[in-house]
Length: 203
Image (cartoon, rainbow, N blue to C red; front, top):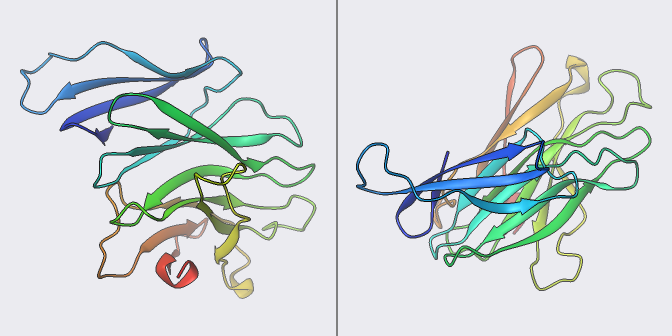
């Protein structure tokens, strides 16, 4: 469930039969049960999987981070979609699946002016002993760049003394404020909660 441009609330879901992502919106103030028609964000190419996360920027762009079902070494595990207020979508792949590396559970966050869009996820290397060097990484999205996404930077890594697997990063659905830290959170399997200020990592 996500805010959408044009004072709408949307439900976005993955459809593994149609291999894609779909959305249905309700206008703010509409009667209960009155919804707009279903629309496709993307269909085909094994795109549909279970992990979805959105952020709406003040100028009316909705960003959607998704996991696909390609599951092929050397191919991107995730796709970032940019939705314009007119309902058109662009996309960029990111998060390459390695022989032993397993990126998982992507999210997307934005600055208040929409000028900084960051994508993050849990990353680990199964070639390493447990907890597999687990960490939370973020990349800056650059729409004007053909590749679209900078190399990831580690923003959260648990204290080795805890020897615990870290995963499940979360952030806000609305843009980060202009005059406050950009806080994201993640947890480990023992229930410890970690935070990072993305403003410090991406000045």
